[in-house]
Length: 201
Image 1 (cartoon, one colour):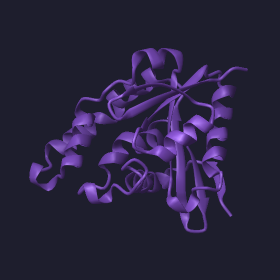
Image 2 (cartoon, helix red, strand yellow; image 1 turned 90 degrees about the horizontal axis):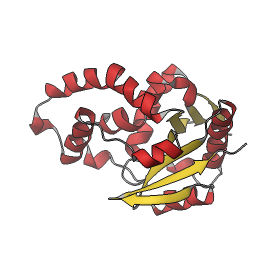
Image 3 (cartoon, rainbow, N blue to C red; image 1 turned 135 degrees about the horizontal axis):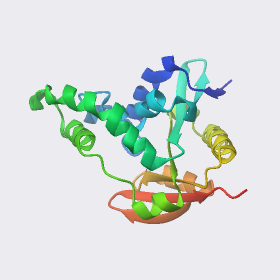
Image 4 (cartoon, rainbow, N blue to C red; image 1 turned 90 degrees about the vertical axis):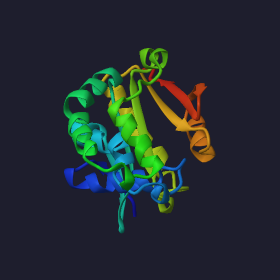
């Protein structure tokens, strides 16, 4: 049995772990990182800490094995990160010797120091954004579809007009899932395919 439920504070380590082991275009990014939390600092953990009400998880008998995280207001969330999330991480990583870091770690840390903005035209049309990852044992069971439906339902109830996300172009399964789930591919920038969905009443 898989339970889909609201996030709890004690799920934070699971957000980090799942983000890492799905972080290489859906595959395990552990071999690329010495710092096992670097990727989660960017793409999963801050949502659980800053906007936990926008996080849902999937849990089976082995533990939490999937999540959907997001925010209703991308621009406001970026401001919260700048105020409440990045400063402590920047201080921490300023003290970590470069020799202890792999290239992928350095790339993630650079993104913490100078976060990039999601494409402005996409944010204007689709102000919310999400990230979702499942461990392999949950894939192929419609768990992702159910998590997405939960997130869309609460976003629509809150009056959100649209959702966007970025998917790795190399993650063919992920790209197919988002397309199949009603997201429109909008543009490809570098290795990221940007999708949008309008939440019409």
